[in-house]
Amino acid sequence: MFMRTDSINHWDIVAEKYCAENRQEKNFHSQIYLAAVNELLGSVNGKRILDAGCGDGFFSLELAQKGALVTAIDGSDAMLNIAKRKHAHDNLQYLNMDLTKKLTFEDKFFDIVVANMSLMDIPEIELFIFEVSRVLKKPGIFVFSITHPCFFLSDWEEDENKTKMYKKIENYLDERVEELNFWGKTLHYHRPLSKYMAAIERAKMCVNSFREPVPSKELIDLYPEQEYHYRIPSFLVIRAKSI
Ligand SMILES: C[S@@+](CC[C@H](N)C(=O)[O-])C[C@H]1O[C@@H](n2cnc3c(N)ncnc32)[C@H](O)[C@@H]1O
Image (cartoon, rainbow, N blue to C red; front, side):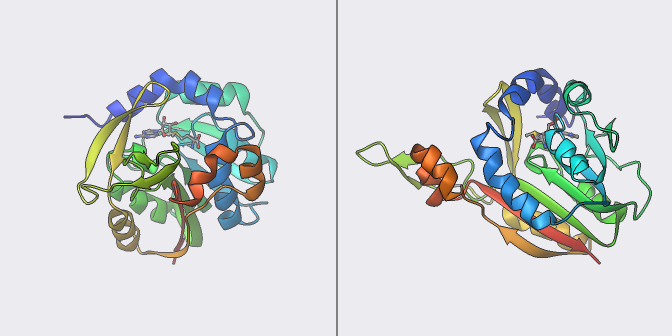
């Protein structure tokens, strides 16, 4: 049985390694989903933004540099220490906050909430999405990126030339937690797409954009071996509106 705090403890341990590998300009995967996140955010100049599960704050800094007033929260002190050291800005404050608990912001405080690659890392999303709706102005927008819940936990199957071709999907509807080992041990909380949609609906928000982003042609020209991303999407980016 995993405790709530396990999700954060693991991130404390892997923080340095994750952050060293996760620079936007160097990281192939983040370039895929951040292009869609930026498209769905639109202009952020002058907007008050909450970056939830900000990690080392590289995206929070990007938002601040574009003129947003950014509050960036994460449950991992190790991540936040890196963020404060590497990605500081006058328009950006970092706070330790657990996304599975009530947030300490006033109602209708933010224009935008963004959450990159953090919702599948928390054991429960209902309260968080409700809190997002509460702290957003009406109207306000919530943009989040996650690994694609339909496909992420299934391994690629290759053809005789070792080309990644198919994925076999099993137990998609079963919510479960799995250990990953990309940067050291972290926990991945699988839940079907309908669970995300139901939480958004219950929080009285409306999904108004939905993307399954793939790498740009320029990116594939640089990394042709990643062409398999055109076969099955690895990420999902959703924009919901508070009304
Ligand atoms: C995959 S990283 C994403 C970080 C950053 N948004 C990015 O795109 O690089 C997941 C982040 O969620 C944070 N996290 C995990 N569980 C959390 C929780 N319960 N409360 C707050 N943050 C949490 C981790 O510390 C980590 O920084």
